[in-house]
Image 1: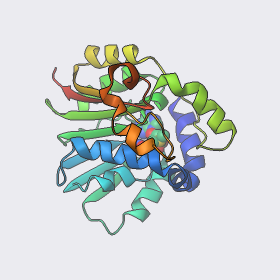
Image 2: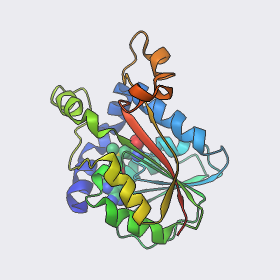
Image 3: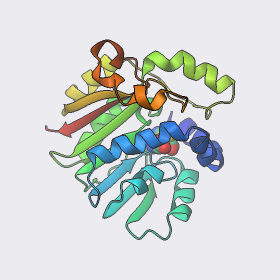
Length: 225
Ligand SMILES: C[S@@+](CC[C@H](N)C(=O)[O-])C[C@H]1O[C@@H](n2cnc3c(N)ncnc32)[C@H](O)[C@@H]1O
Protein backbone atom coordinates (compact mmCIF):
# COMPACT_ATOMS: atom_id res chain seq x y z
CA UNK A 1 0.00 0.00 0.00
CA UNK A 2 2.88 2.43 0.63
CA UNK A 3 3.33 3.05 -3.16
CA UNK A 4 -0.31 4.12 -3.48
CA UNK A 5 -0.08 6.18 -0.28
CA UNK A 6 3.10 7.94 -1.42
CA UNK A 7 1.48 8.62 -4.82
CA UNK A 8 -1.62 10.06 -3.17
CA UNK A 9 0.34 12.36 -0.85
CA UNK A 10 2.69 13.37 -3.66
CA UNK A 11 -0.43 14.37 -5.57
CA UNK A 12 -1.91 16.46 -2.73
CA UNK A 13 1.41 17.86 -1.42
CA UNK A 14 1.10 21.11 -3.41
CA UNK A 15 -2.32 21.87 -1.90
CA UNK A 16 -1.65 20.45 1.57
CA UNK A 17 -1.06 23.85 3.18
CA UNK A 18 -4.23 25.20 1.55
CA UNK A 19 -6.23 22.44 3.28
CA UNK A 20 -4.47 23.08 6.55
CA UNK A 21 -5.38 26.76 6.33
CA UNK A 22 -8.99 25.86 5.54
CA UNK A 23 -9.11 23.65 8.64
CA UNK A 24 -6.83 25.83 10.77
CA UNK A 25 -8.87 25.24 13.94
CA UNK A 26 -8.18 21.51 13.74
CA UNK A 27 -4.48 21.89 12.91
CA UNK A 28 -3.92 24.48 15.64
CA UNK A 29 -5.47 22.07 18.13
CA UNK A 30 -3.09 19.32 16.97
CA UNK A 31 -0.09 21.63 17.43
CA UNK A 32 -1.23 22.73 20.89
CA UNK A 33 -1.82 19.12 21.88
CA UNK A 34 1.63 17.96 20.72
CA UNK A 35 3.29 20.96 22.38
CA UNK A 36 1.70 19.97 25.69
CA UNK A 37 3.66 16.69 25.63
CA UNK A 38 6.92 17.73 23.97
CA UNK A 39 8.87 20.43 25.82
CA UNK A 40 10.30 23.21 23.67
CA UNK A 41 14.00 22.62 22.89
CA UNK A 42 13.71 18.81 22.82
CA UNK A 43 15.15 16.44 20.25
CA UNK A 44 12.13 15.30 18.23
CA UNK A 45 11.34 13.05 15.28
CA UNK A 46 8.08 13.41 13.39
CA UNK A 47 6.91 10.40 11.37
CA UNK A 48 4.62 11.31 8.47
CA UNK A 49 5.62 14.95 8.82
CA UNK A 50 3.86 16.23 5.69
CA UNK A 51 5.12 19.77 5.04
CA UNK A 52 6.78 19.93 8.46
CA UNK A 53 4.67 22.52 10.27
CA UNK A 54 3.90 20.46 13.35
CA UNK A 55 7.59 19.66 13.80
CA UNK A 56 8.46 23.36 13.46
CA UNK A 57 5.72 24.31 15.94
CA UNK A 58 7.39 22.12 18.57
CA UNK A 59 10.49 24.35 18.39
CA UNK A 60 12.90 21.43 18.80
CA UNK A 61 16.64 21.89 19.38
CA UNK A 62 16.95 19.18 16.72
CA UNK A 63 14.00 17.92 14.68
CA UNK A 64 13.91 15.22 12.04
CA UNK A 65 10.84 14.90 9.81
CA UNK A 66 10.30 11.66 7.91
CA UNK A 67 7.65 11.08 5.27
CA UNK A 68 6.97 8.44 2.62
CA UNK A 69 6.03 11.15 0.11
CA UNK A 70 9.04 12.70 -1.68
CA UNK A 71 6.93 15.72 -2.67
CA UNK A 72 5.96 16.46 0.93
CA UNK A 73 9.63 16.25 1.93
CA UNK A 74 10.68 18.55 -0.89
CA UNK A 75 8.14 21.18 0.19
CA UNK A 76 9.07 20.75 3.88
CA UNK A 77 12.77 21.28 3.06
CA UNK A 78 12.02 24.47 1.09
CA UNK A 79 9.58 25.87 3.67
CA UNK A 80 11.87 25.35 6.62
CA UNK A 81 15.21 25.95 4.87
CA UNK A 82 16.11 28.82 7.23
CA UNK A 83 15.55 26.74 10.36
CA UNK A 84 18.89 25.01 10.98
CA UNK A 85 17.38 22.81 13.71
CA UNK A 86 15.16 20.95 11.24
CA UNK A 87 16.02 18.28 8.69
CA UNK A 88 13.76 16.13 6.54
CA UNK A 89 14.14 12.76 4.83
CA UNK A 90 12.03 10.39 2.78
CA UNK A 91 11.27 7.16 4.64
CA UNK A 92 8.58 4.55 5.16
CA UNK A 93 8.04 3.93 8.87
CA UNK A 94 6.95 0.34 8.15
CA UNK A 95 10.28 -0.71 6.62
CA UNK A 96 12.93 1.92 7.36
CA UNK A 97 15.98 0.80 9.30
CA UNK A 98 17.54 4.08 10.34
CA UNK A 99 17.38 4.33 14.17
CA UNK A 100 15.41 7.24 15.61
CA UNK A 101 17.70 8.89 18.12
CA UNK A 102 15.10 11.10 19.80
CA UNK A 103 13.32 10.91 23.15
CA UNK A 104 10.15 12.27 21.53
CA UNK A 105 8.42 10.93 18.42
CA UNK A 106 5.24 12.47 17.02
CA UNK A 107 2.87 10.76 14.61
CA UNK A 108 -0.27 12.82 13.87
CA UNK A 109 -2.88 11.41 11.46
CA UNK A 110 -0.49 8.85 10.01
CA UNK A 111 -1.33 5.39 11.36
CA UNK A 112 -4.56 5.17 9.36
CA UNK A 113 -2.48 5.49 6.16
CA UNK A 114 0.28 2.98 6.78
CA UNK A 115 -1.71 -0.02 5.54
CA UNK A 116 -0.75 -2.33 8.38
CA UNK A 117 -0.57 -0.62 11.77
CA UNK A 118 0.80 -3.72 13.49
CA UNK A 119 3.71 -3.96 11.06
CA UNK A 120 4.38 -0.24 11.40
CA UNK A 121 4.42 -0.33 15.21
CA UNK A 122 6.57 -3.47 15.14
CA UNK A 123 9.14 -1.73 12.94
CA UNK A 124 8.95 1.45 15.01
CA UNK A 125 9.71 -0.59 18.12
CA UNK A 126 13.08 -1.56 16.54
CA UNK A 127 13.91 2.08 15.73
CA UNK A 128 13.18 4.01 18.93
CA UNK A 129 15.16 3.99 22.17
CA UNK A 130 13.78 2.42 25.34
CA UNK A 131 11.57 4.93 27.22
CA UNK A 132 11.05 7.05 24.09
CA UNK A 133 7.71 8.86 24.20
CA UNK A 134 5.56 8.50 21.08
CA UNK A 135 2.61 10.87 20.64
CA UNK A 136 0.02 9.33 18.31
CA UNK A 137 -3.14 11.09 17.14
CA UNK A 138 -5.92 9.83 14.89
CA UNK A 139 -9.34 11.01 13.80
CA UNK A 140 -11.82 9.21 16.02
CA UNK A 141 -13.28 6.32 13.93
CA UNK A 142 -16.78 7.38 15.11
CA UNK A 143 -16.41 10.44 12.87
CA UNK A 144 -15.64 8.51 9.65
CA UNK A 145 -19.15 9.07 8.11
CA UNK A 146 -18.87 12.83 8.74
CA UNK A 147 -15.38 12.88 7.24
CA UNK A 148 -16.59 11.09 4.10
CA UNK A 149 -19.37 13.64 3.60
CA UNK A 150 -16.98 16.55 4.28
CA UNK A 151 -14.59 15.17 1.66
CA UNK A 152 -17.40 14.86 -0.92
CA UNK A 153 -18.31 18.49 -0.21
CA UNK A 154 -14.65 19.53 -0.70
CA UNK A 155 -14.50 20.73 2.90
CA UNK A 156 -11.39 18.67 3.63
CA UNK A 157 -8.38 17.21 1.90
CA UNK A 158 -8.94 13.98 -0.05
CA UNK A 159 -8.01 11.30 2.48
CA UNK A 160 -6.57 8.79 -0.01
CA UNK A 161 -5.91 5.16 0.94
CA UNK A 162 -6.71 4.66 4.62
CA UNK A 163 -8.20 2.26 7.08
CA UNK A 164 -9.72 3.19 10.44
CA UNK A 165 -9.41 0.35 12.88
CA UNK A 166 -11.12 0.62 16.27
CA UNK A 167 -9.60 2.30 19.28
CA UNK A 168 -9.42 -1.08 21.04
CA UNK A 169 -7.59 -2.63 18.06
CA UNK A 170 -5.05 0.22 18.08
CA UNK A 171 -4.48 -0.23 21.79
CA UNK A 172 -4.02 -3.97 21.41
CA UNK A 173 -1.34 -3.34 18.78
CA UNK A 174 0.43 -0.81 21.01
CA UNK A 175 0.51 -3.32 23.87
CA UNK A 176 1.66 -6.24 21.68
CA UNK A 177 4.50 -4.18 20.20
CA UNK A 178 5.83 -2.99 23.57
CA UNK A 179 4.27 0.47 23.82
CA UNK A 180 2.71 1.31 27.18
CA UNK A 181 -0.08 3.89 27.24
CA UNK A 182 1.03 6.74 29.51
CA UNK A 183 -1.87 9.01 28.66
CA UNK A 184 -4.93 8.84 26.44
CA UNK A 185 -7.56 11.43 25.68
CA UNK A 186 -9.81 13.22 23.25
CA UNK A 187 -9.97 16.73 21.85
CA UNK A 188 -12.38 18.79 19.71
CA UNK A 189 -16.01 17.96 20.10
CA UNK A 190 -16.64 20.75 17.58
CA UNK A 191 -13.87 20.69 14.93
CA UNK A 192 -14.84 24.06 13.39
CA UNK A 193 -14.51 27.51 14.90
CA UNK A 194 -18.13 28.42 15.50
CA UNK A 195 -19.57 30.41 18.43
CA UNK A 196 -19.27 28.37 21.62
CA UNK A 197 -16.76 25.89 20.16
CA UNK A 198 -13.81 27.16 22.21
CA UNK A 199 -15.81 26.98 25.43
CA UNK A 200 -17.08 23.45 24.80
CA UNK A 201 -13.79 22.12 23.41
CA UNK A 202 -11.90 23.35 26.47
CA UNK A 203 -14.18 21.33 28.77
CA UNK A 204 -15.91 18.35 27.17
CA UNK A 205 -12.95 15.98 27.45
CA UNK A 206 -13.26 16.07 31.23
CA UNK A 207 -16.88 14.87 31.07
CA UNK A 208 -17.00 11.05 31.05
CA UNK A 209 -20.14 10.66 28.94
CA UNK A 210 -19.17 13.08 26.20
CA UNK A 211 -15.41 12.73 25.89
CA UNK A 212 -15.38 9.65 23.67
CA UNK A 213 -17.15 11.68 20.95
CA UNK A 214 -14.13 13.95 20.51
CA UNK A 215 -12.92 14.26 16.94
CA UNK A 216 -9.27 13.67 17.86
CA UNK A 217 -8.14 10.70 19.87
CA UNK A 218 -4.57 10.73 21.14
CA UNK A 219 -2.22 8.52 23.06
CA UNK A 220 1.13 9.24 24.65
CA UNK A 221 3.03 5.96 24.49
CA UNK A 222 6.26 4.88 26.10
CA UNK A 223 8.37 2.19 24.52
CA UNK A 224 9.08 -0.27 27.31
CA UNK A 225 10.06 -3.63 25.79
C1 LIG B 1 -2.72 13.12 6.81
S1 LIG B 1 -1.03 13.44 6.53
C2 LIG B 1 -0.53 14.10 8.10
C3 LIG B 1 0.69 14.98 7.99
C4 LIG B 1 1.13 15.63 9.30
N1 LIG B 1 1.46 14.63 10.28
C5 LIG B 1 0.06 16.54 9.83
O1 LIG B 1 -0.60 16.18 10.81
O2 LIG B 1 -0.14 17.63 9.25
C6 LIG B 1 -0.32 11.82 6.58
C7 LIG B 1 1.15 11.85 6.23
O3 LIG B 1 1.71 10.58 6.55
C8 LIG B 1 2.58 10.19 5.50
N2 LIG B 1 2.71 8.72 5.51
C9 LIG B 1 1.76 7.80 5.20
N3 LIG B 1 2.23 6.55 5.31
C10 LIG B 1 3.52 6.68 5.73
C11 LIG B 1 4.55 5.74 6.02
N4 LIG B 1 4.35 4.42 5.89
N5 LIG B 1 5.75 6.21 6.43
C12 LIG B 1 5.98 7.55 6.54
N6 LIG B 1 5.04 8.49 6.26
C13 LIG B 1 3.83 8.06 5.87
C14 LIG B 1 1.91 10.75 4.25
O4 LIG B 1 2.78 10.86 3.16
C15 LIG B 1 1.39 12.08 4.76
O5 LIG B 1 2.32 13.12 4.56
